Length: 151
Image 1 (cartoon, rainbow, N blue to C red):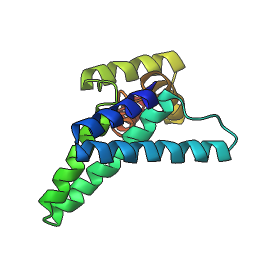
Image 2 (cartoon, helix red, strand yellow):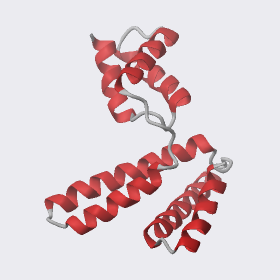
Image 3 (cartoon, rainbow, N blue to C red):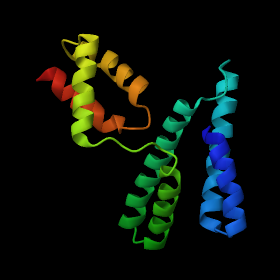
Image 4 (cartoon, one colour):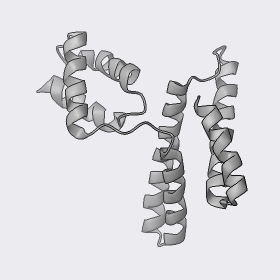
């Protein structure tokens, strides 16, 4: 499980005295615990590994936005820190699909759902999320699905 991998990595980072990795992994653990608490409050079980991948992607996206802001503000050291955090978190995501693989997956999902137009976009995205959680950027995939269904 991802949780065990992260906890083991925390121990390794402590032994190696890798402060950046240690603080990032502790932040990841904290985010996971908060997400579990939110899920419990809604009567849901603790997050599965697939759910955690979505949490990790959200964390990475937040850091990418921070990098842009820091670079615009001339804070290169803070942007570098955010990039290091992205690298640590990304290590727990499965390999990202190439653009041509994403397009093929979208075409397969459209065929599978029988999607005929924009009104079926939600069905296609749901199939993609179920099969490819953590492997594709759903922001980009959404645009590709929209283009495929409208064209």
